[in-house]
Image (cartoon, rainbow, N blue to C red; front, side, top):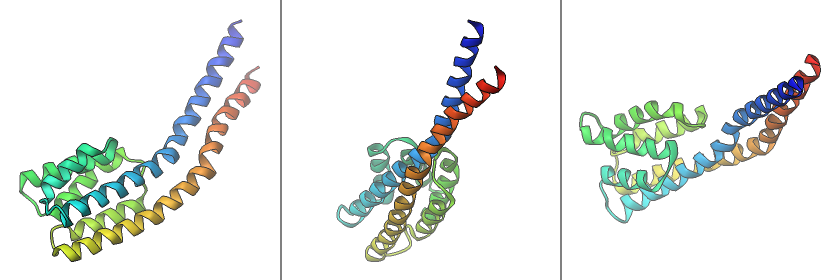
Length: 171
């Protein structure tokens, strides 16, 4: 009876580990979609609402959830401090929030380059920079969806199967 309980615990722990290891594959496309929605909202706020960057960032942060909301909230807080340019505030926010995300280096570079243009150009140029970032993020979203389809199920199964292997080795 004790052996059976131990085997069930090992299998549960290994399966849980597999699910945790698969989490970034599931979260990355979702977070990229949130970024796409956030940048589209930012474009609308700036272009059509003529909303200041600080207020637009706060509104976007309230619309979203998770680390992407934290990114825009932190950005708004950095802008409120008034100690830095919009680009510097964006980069500081990225560095602060980045460890919480499931995003990769490519997305970081896209967002960093986008941040360098914030507040430095007129409305039309700013819109072009937002559209460029959106295009790059759409490409990354397609790649993330492929990686999710290819790897998520495999990693989950690998966790379960490694638990079975460990049970067999210990018996």
